[in-house]
Image (tube, rainbow, N blue to C red; front, side, top):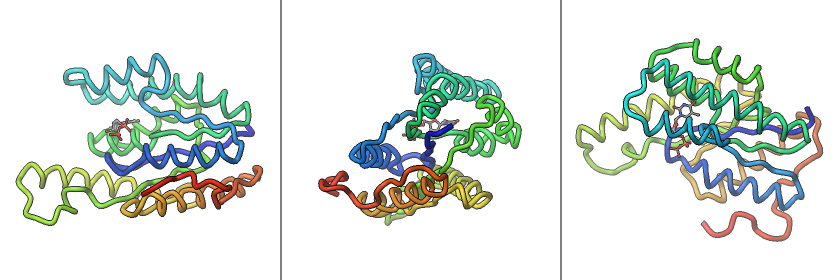
Length: 219
Ligand code: TYD
Protein backbone atom coordinates (compact mmCIF):
# COMPACT_ATOMS: atom_id res chain seq x y z
CA UNK A 1 0.00 0.00 0.00
CA UNK A 2 1.63 3.24 -1.16
CA UNK A 3 -0.89 5.80 0.07
CA UNK A 4 -1.08 7.72 3.34
CA UNK A 5 -3.96 7.44 5.81
CA UNK A 6 -4.61 10.19 8.37
CA UNK A 7 -7.60 10.25 10.73
CA UNK A 8 -8.97 13.15 12.78
CA UNK A 9 -10.53 12.41 16.16
CA UNK A 10 -11.80 14.41 19.12
CA UNK A 11 -14.95 15.44 20.93
CA UNK A 12 -17.86 17.20 19.28
CA UNK A 13 -17.20 20.80 18.25
CA UNK A 14 -13.38 20.80 18.35
CA UNK A 15 -13.07 21.99 14.73
CA UNK A 16 -12.35 18.72 12.91
CA UNK A 17 -14.16 19.75 9.73
CA UNK A 18 -12.30 23.06 9.43
CA UNK A 19 -8.92 21.44 10.02
CA UNK A 20 -9.65 18.62 7.57
CA UNK A 21 -10.55 21.18 4.89
CA UNK A 22 -7.38 23.19 5.55
CA UNK A 23 -5.15 20.11 5.42
CA UNK A 24 -6.81 18.92 2.20
CA UNK A 25 -6.28 22.36 0.60
CA UNK A 26 -2.64 22.35 1.68
CA UNK A 27 -1.97 18.87 0.27
CA UNK A 28 -3.84 19.59 -2.96
CA UNK A 29 -1.79 22.78 -3.41
CA UNK A 30 1.23 20.44 -3.30
CA UNK A 31 -0.38 18.37 -6.11
CA UNK A 32 -1.32 15.42 -3.94
CA UNK A 33 -4.26 13.17 -4.75
CA UNK A 34 -6.48 13.66 -1.66
CA UNK A 35 -9.68 11.87 -0.62
CA UNK A 36 -11.65 13.49 2.21
CA UNK A 37 -14.14 11.18 3.86
CA UNK A 38 -15.90 10.47 7.13
CA UNK A 39 -17.51 7.88 9.37
CA UNK A 40 -20.33 7.31 9.68
CA UNK A 41 -21.60 8.15 6.21
CA UNK A 42 -18.67 8.10 3.75
CA UNK A 43 -20.50 5.89 1.20
CA UNK A 44 -24.07 5.60 -0.13
CA UNK A 45 -24.74 2.68 2.19
CA UNK A 46 -23.02 4.63 4.95
CA UNK A 47 -25.44 7.55 4.53
CA UNK A 48 -28.31 5.14 5.21
CA UNK A 49 -26.51 3.57 8.18
CA UNK A 50 -25.71 7.05 9.53
CA UNK A 51 -29.39 7.92 9.30
CA UNK A 52 -30.31 4.71 11.13
CA UNK A 53 -27.79 5.10 13.92
CA UNK A 54 -27.92 8.86 14.49
CA UNK A 55 -31.53 9.72 13.78
CA UNK A 56 -33.38 6.52 14.61
CA UNK A 57 -35.33 6.01 17.79
CA UNK A 58 -33.52 4.29 20.63
CA UNK A 59 -30.97 1.84 19.21
CA UNK A 60 -29.77 -0.89 21.58
CA UNK A 61 -26.08 -0.33 22.44
CA UNK A 62 -24.82 -3.51 20.76
CA UNK A 63 -26.89 -2.78 17.64
CA UNK A 64 -25.46 0.74 17.59
CA UNK A 65 -21.90 -0.58 17.83
CA UNK A 66 -22.57 -3.02 14.97
CA UNK A 67 -24.11 -0.31 12.78
CA UNK A 68 -20.98 1.83 13.15
CA UNK A 69 -18.88 -1.27 12.42
CA UNK A 70 -20.97 -2.13 9.34
CA UNK A 71 -20.57 1.41 8.02
CA UNK A 72 -16.82 1.14 8.66
CA UNK A 73 -16.40 -2.27 6.99
CA UNK A 74 -18.08 -1.09 3.80
CA UNK A 75 -16.37 2.31 3.81
CA UNK A 76 -12.86 0.93 4.27
CA UNK A 77 -13.31 -1.88 1.73
CA UNK A 78 -14.93 0.17 -1.03
CA UNK A 79 -13.49 3.66 -0.65
CA UNK A 80 -10.49 3.96 1.65
CA UNK A 81 -8.43 0.89 0.67
CA UNK A 82 -8.86 1.50 -3.08
CA UNK A 83 -7.74 5.14 -2.65
CA UNK A 84 -4.69 4.06 -0.61
CA UNK A 85 -3.84 1.30 -3.06
CA UNK A 86 -3.89 3.90 -5.86
CA UNK A 87 -1.27 5.85 -3.88
CA UNK A 88 -3.59 8.61 -2.64
CA UNK A 89 -3.76 10.45 0.66
CA UNK A 90 -6.93 9.77 2.64
CA UNK A 91 -8.07 12.26 5.28
CA UNK A 92 -10.83 10.76 7.39
CA UNK A 93 -13.16 12.29 9.98
CA UNK A 94 -13.42 9.71 12.82
CA UNK A 95 -12.45 6.02 12.87
CA UNK A 96 -11.97 3.13 15.31
CA UNK A 97 -11.11 5.41 18.25
CA UNK A 98 -14.55 7.04 18.05
CA UNK A 99 -16.19 3.63 18.46
CA UNK A 100 -13.91 2.68 21.33
CA UNK A 101 -14.51 6.01 23.06
CA UNK A 102 -18.25 6.47 22.42
CA UNK A 103 -19.55 2.87 22.23
CA UNK A 104 -16.81 1.11 24.21
CA UNK A 105 -16.10 3.61 26.95
CA UNK A 106 -19.22 5.67 27.33
CA UNK A 107 -21.59 2.71 26.86
CA UNK A 108 -19.55 0.17 28.79
CA UNK A 109 -18.93 -2.33 25.97
CA UNK A 110 -15.21 -2.44 26.67
CA UNK A 111 -12.54 -3.89 24.41
CA UNK A 112 -15.03 -5.90 22.39
CA UNK A 113 -15.86 -2.82 20.34
CA UNK A 114 -12.24 -2.48 19.27
CA UNK A 115 -12.07 -6.15 18.24
CA UNK A 116 -15.24 -5.77 16.15
CA UNK A 117 -13.80 -2.69 14.44
CA UNK A 118 -10.48 -4.44 13.75
CA UNK A 119 -12.36 -7.34 12.20
CA UNK A 120 -14.53 -4.96 10.15
CA UNK A 121 -11.48 -3.16 8.72
CA UNK A 122 -9.21 -6.22 8.42
CA UNK A 123 -6.89 -4.35 10.74
CA UNK A 124 -6.30 -1.23 8.66
CA UNK A 125 -4.36 1.17 10.92
CA UNK A 126 -3.88 4.87 10.09
CA UNK A 127 -0.33 6.16 9.65
CA UNK A 128 -1.37 9.05 11.89
CA UNK A 129 -4.34 9.92 14.10
CA UNK A 130 -4.68 13.62 14.92
CA UNK A 131 -6.55 14.18 18.19
CA UNK A 132 -7.87 17.74 18.32
CA UNK A 133 -7.94 18.45 22.02
CA UNK A 134 -9.95 21.15 23.77
CA UNK A 135 -11.50 21.76 27.17
CA UNK A 136 -15.27 21.14 26.92
CA UNK A 137 -17.19 24.26 25.93
CA UNK A 138 -19.35 24.32 29.07
CA UNK A 139 -16.26 24.38 31.27
CA UNK A 140 -14.88 27.27 29.26
CA UNK A 141 -18.03 29.35 29.92
CA UNK A 142 -17.06 31.82 32.56
CA UNK A 143 -20.18 31.48 34.74
CA UNK A 144 -22.06 29.06 37.00
CA UNK A 145 -23.42 26.09 35.08
CA UNK A 146 -26.94 24.78 35.42
CA UNK A 147 -27.55 21.05 35.96
CA UNK A 148 -27.81 20.13 32.28
CA UNK A 149 -24.67 22.10 31.45
CA UNK A 150 -22.82 20.39 34.30
CA UNK A 151 -23.85 16.94 33.06
CA UNK A 152 -22.89 17.80 29.49
CA UNK A 153 -19.53 19.12 30.64
CA UNK A 154 -18.90 15.99 32.73
CA UNK A 155 -19.74 13.73 29.78
CA UNK A 156 -17.55 15.72 27.40
CA UNK A 157 -14.70 15.64 29.91
CA UNK A 158 -14.89 11.82 29.96
CA UNK A 159 -14.87 11.70 26.14
CA UNK A 160 -11.90 14.06 26.00
CA UNK A 161 -9.92 12.00 28.53
CA UNK A 162 -10.73 8.77 26.68
CA UNK A 163 -9.23 10.16 23.45
CA UNK A 164 -6.13 11.33 25.36
CA UNK A 165 -5.79 7.86 26.92
CA UNK A 166 -5.99 6.23 23.47
CA UNK A 167 -3.27 8.57 22.18
CA UNK A 168 -1.03 7.87 25.17
CA UNK A 169 -1.07 4.13 24.39
CA UNK A 170 0.70 4.65 21.04
CA UNK A 171 2.35 8.10 20.92
CA UNK A 172 4.19 7.33 17.66
CA UNK A 173 0.94 7.04 15.74
CA UNK A 174 -0.93 9.93 17.39
CA UNK A 175 -0.53 13.70 17.45
CA UNK A 176 -2.47 15.44 20.22
CA UNK A 177 -2.94 19.05 19.12
CA UNK A 178 -4.26 21.90 21.26
CA UNK A 179 -7.36 22.97 19.33
CA UNK A 180 -8.18 25.99 21.53
CA UNK A 181 -6.10 28.35 19.37
CA UNK A 182 -6.52 30.21 16.09
CA UNK A 183 -7.25 27.94 13.17
CA UNK A 184 -3.96 28.90 11.47
CA UNK A 185 -1.95 27.88 14.53
CA UNK A 186 -3.77 24.57 14.77
CA UNK A 187 -3.40 23.99 11.00
CA UNK A 188 0.35 24.63 11.15
CA UNK A 189 0.72 21.96 13.85
CA UNK A 190 -1.46 19.54 11.86
CA UNK A 191 0.67 20.00 8.74
CA UNK A 192 3.88 19.54 10.76
CA UNK A 193 2.55 16.30 12.27
CA UNK A 194 1.47 14.99 8.85
CA UNK A 195 4.82 15.91 7.29
CA UNK A 196 6.68 14.06 10.06
CA UNK A 197 4.49 10.98 9.70
CA UNK A 198 4.83 11.00 5.89
CA UNK A 199 8.62 11.15 6.28
CA UNK A 200 8.52 8.31 8.81
CA UNK A 201 6.52 6.20 6.35
CA UNK A 202 9.23 6.79 3.72
CA UNK A 203 6.81 8.56 1.35
CA UNK A 204 7.63 11.63 -0.78
CA UNK A 205 7.88 14.68 1.49
CA UNK A 206 5.01 17.15 1.86
CA UNK A 207 5.83 20.86 2.35
CA UNK A 208 5.31 22.29 5.82
CA UNK A 209 5.13 25.92 4.67
CA UNK A 210 2.32 27.04 2.38
CA UNK A 211 3.48 27.25 -1.24
CA UNK A 212 2.77 30.80 -2.49
CA UNK A 213 -0.83 31.31 -1.45
CA UNK A 214 -1.92 31.10 2.15
CA UNK A 215 -4.16 28.01 2.11
CA UNK A 216 -5.79 28.62 5.45
CA UNK A 217 -7.17 32.10 4.85
CA UNK A 218 -8.26 34.49 7.57
CA UNK A 219 -8.73 33.46 11.22
P1 TYD B 1 -19.50 13.49 13.28
O1 TYD B 1 -20.16 13.30 11.97
O2 TYD B 1 -18.02 13.59 13.30
O3 TYD B 1 -20.17 14.75 13.92
P2 TYD B 1 -19.54 15.86 14.85
O4 TYD B 1 -19.41 17.04 13.94
O5 TYD B 1 -20.58 16.05 15.90
O6 TYD B 1 -18.24 15.37 15.38
O7 TYD B 1 -19.87 12.32 14.27
C1 TYD B 1 -21.17 12.08 14.56
C2 TYD B 1 -21.33 11.40 15.90
O8 TYD B 1 -21.13 9.99 15.75
C3 TYD B 1 -20.39 11.88 16.97
O9 TYD B 1 -21.14 12.34 18.07
C4 TYD B 1 -19.64 10.65 17.38
C5 TYD B 1 -20.48 9.51 16.89
N1 TYD B 1 -19.72 8.29 16.54
C6 TYD B 1 -19.79 7.20 17.38
O10 TYD B 1 -20.46 7.23 18.40
N2 TYD B 1 -19.12 6.06 17.05
C7 TYD B 1 -18.37 5.95 15.93
O11 TYD B 1 -17.76 4.89 15.65
C8 TYD B 1 -18.31 7.09 15.05
C9 TYD B 1 -17.49 7.02 13.80
C10 TYD B 1 -18.99 8.25 15.40
